[in-house]
Amino acid sequence: MLKKTDRTKRQYCEALLGICERKRLSKITIRELAEATDTTRQTFYNNFRDINDLISYLPINYLKTAQMDVLSTENARRAYEYAYEHRGFFGQLPAHAGQNSFRETFITWLENAYYAKLIGDEMDDDERLYRKLSIDIFAIGITNQFLDWCSAGFSWPLDTLLKAQEAALPEFAKQAISAGKPN
Image (cartoon, rainbow, N blue to C red; front, side):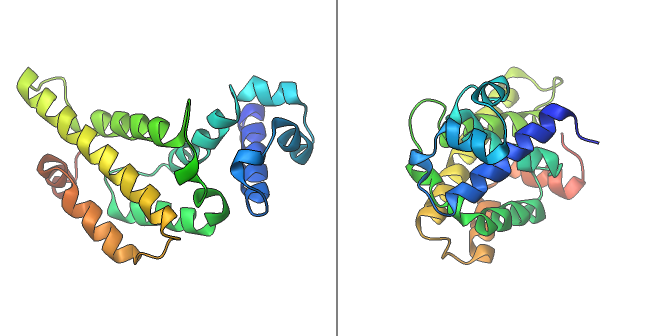
């Protein structure tokens, strides 16, 4: 059973997805979201700092809620399919810029998810730094690739996109996948 806060956040996510089907993301207001969820502006602010916080929260929460292992190509496929299903929202993300933008927030979240999976305390400083830098480059690259896919109207074949993403994965991550363990 979801906590009330989680249910409320889910309502805002669903409202945002629905409104994006007919309206530009940059034109959506807190008042409009509050009306769509039958809540108040204060309830919105009790859950999110601003609309950019909600915009970034939505895709990250989907990945967390689905408990998707970031190393899995199949989970990447499911995430891309979710984006395609909600292309009214995701198609507008490439234009989303500024403070707390989706791009910056998602890169940070993705980096941290990979760090947790692929960097161990037992590693020497050089290996830790090498992995961190490799993960940073990969996270930036696949986030940019995702946003480019959205900008291209989701027209790139998903298998090709996933193949390129998998090829760019650092070797130590590929080894962790084939070994079936994170470190």
